[in-house]
Structure formats: C-alpha cells, structure tokens
Length: 123
Image 1 (tube, rainbow, N blue to C red):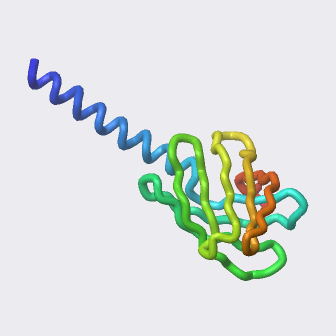
Image 2: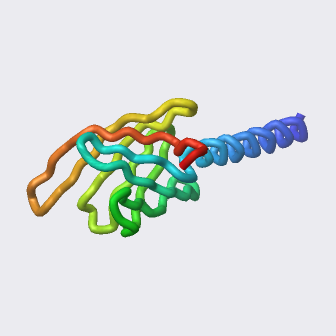
Image 3: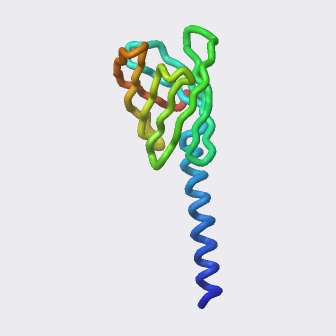
C-alpha cells in the first residue's frame, strides 16, 4: 500500500510539472499587442515558473523595451522596465486575449484596452 501511494504521488508530481510546463507554453513566444488607439507592437515573452521576462518592440521603430511580470493561472501581467506601462490579460488558448493597458507619466495614468494574439504565419 505504501509503495502504491509513492507511485501515485510521483505521478501526481509529474502531472503537476507537465501542467505548469503546458501553462508556460501558452504564454511563451511571440505576441502581437494592440493597445486601443495605438500602433501594433510585438512582444516576445519567456516564462520560467510564474516569472515572465521579455521585450516589446514598437511597430513604428526598432526600439526594444524590456518587460518583466508574472503568469499565474490564466492571468498574465507584465510591465516595462521603467514601470510606465502595464499590461494585464487573461490568456486563453485559441483566441485573442483582451485585457487592460495602463500608461503612467509621473502621477498621471490613463487606462485603455489591449488585445494580444499570436502573429499570423505571414508576419
């Protein structure tokens, strides 16, 4: 009985690891990011555990800005290094994800919508 419990526990730990890996793969990679009223951007994200790192590039320039954040359950949040911009979305496989974008300059912050989707094959 003890041996069976150990095997079941090992399988549970392995399944939990795969689940975390599958969740990370839902977020890792390239994304087209569209903030309401702004030019499209491209984000490239990496996920390790719940930690998100990457870069976001403007469609109108080659300037790259580093981003950091987290991915827990289906909630992805990341912000630019200077913490001027915040992106928060719920990631669901197979559909564009929509969420909130906040931009701050000093004490003044504005809030907009943001949509993220995987780039099409042509891009």
